[in-house]
Length: 244
Image (cartoon, rainbow, N blue to C red; front, side):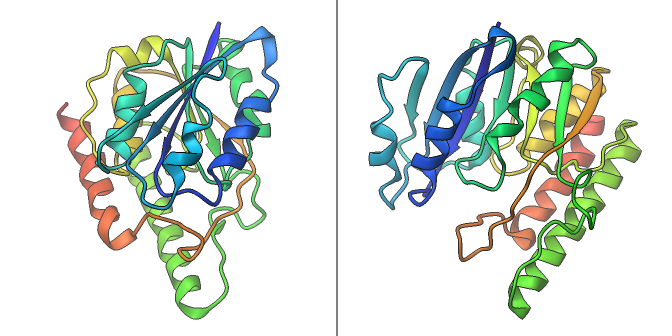
């Protein structure tokens, strides 16, 4: 079996090399082969030059966008090129730990589900309050984004019949055959919810696994903006419940 890892990268010069090295060095269980598809989104901070150094490495493929089109668009491009039996989408920062790969893969390899979410809320001692920053405005930003993730998870559970604790997590694993059946449309951060919505509507079984998470602030490169992206997420959750 092949484990495909799609990595959208945009203006992540500070962390891209470290993340990519960790992904390539992380041992995989069960004799899984590794396929890494990097989608470089037209960075302006030197990230593209860093990514070029990984061209030609075994199991690595690099795709280049001519301009930034949004994270969802980059993920769609990457998914169109993967051949894996199991697929994960990995951000190019260091908020999540690739050492969680074996735990995330276990439920799928055991056949207990078709979708795995890496929940930040299951392990964190303060549950959903996993973003905590210093400084008044950063603390307010973290609180609002935390509330948003909790609110959207509750709405998603009510509409789709799931029991998720962290619907907004980046760590999501899917079966390659299921992804090939989907026609994805999202351009931005709402892509996460579109994927989950369409698979939930197909009756796929979801399992959550606790994962490590260390949030980064806006000053450290966090790109999501609740006042810009939040409404798109809400629209996606509602829209895909009733339409394609």
